[in-house]
Length: 419
Image (cartoon, rainbow, N blue to C red; front, side, top):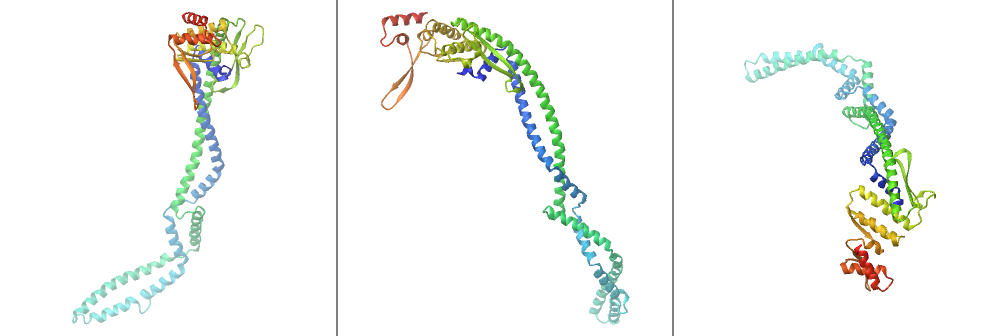
């Protein structure tokens, strides 16, 4: 039965307390605390994984940072390494070219001068030769310039084996990093270095976020415990009032020695409803031990207890409709009439729907509906029909009779409907 459920008992008590805003405030804080706790736990778990990877990230970053990578460096190094590897060949070639241009007895420049002298002696007699002389003059100027540059190249070809080792070592470092990280350019290595730097910065930022969230959690916990304490106080006060009111109604319903109490125990930890464990206790006889309502064996006692509780909380809540299904279980006679009176009083402030087999309760209603089953060969259907005045008398008289409805039953039904 619903009355024996912990959550129902809690809702009943909270509907009866003097400060209904406290449960709402606590629920809001608790939900925020739960959300922050979940986020914090997730962040800590992620951070632990990141921490496990931190040494790896830091090593990779330090190695790339120590390399001092320059995106334009590789091409220059490869060109320099190619030269230094062939420096002796280059030196010999330049020396030979310099000899041919400047140092031998028959230099290229000297031969060209002889050619010019030979043609210039006859250039006045043959216009085509004049053109060739002009071209040879231009060639002589260009050749002299080339000879000068070749002569100067010697200073640029000084070979330094230490430099070759340095350049080769630098290239090996870059090639090793490219191969290790499966990339083809220094630009990609620089991007990787920045990525590792970002991950390391993320660890620092994550630590700061964890500290912030932990601080927020601590503040929310403090407020949640404060509100839980306030909630316990108003529940203790409300529980005493509810117990007194329910006990009074039970006496009206014929349970003269019945006693109802609200027992509140406190948890150490927070729950979604506070720190309180609520238990409704009941005894039908003075001097008997109080027991949880879930241990009540009598259907009549349970029905009257549920009616008493519902009649009280409906006064506190703005419920448009209250439904009683089999609230008359285990009661009869004079007690049934008292149950009907309480339900009737409730109907002054709420719409009340009661499903009953007792004429004393049914007669208190303003309107009646008959629920019946209609059976054919193929189907069985449950139907409902609104009763007119005659139908009301007939059905209540039927409740009062065994089989055949007597005139006395009809008269009693009419009397019940007018009370």
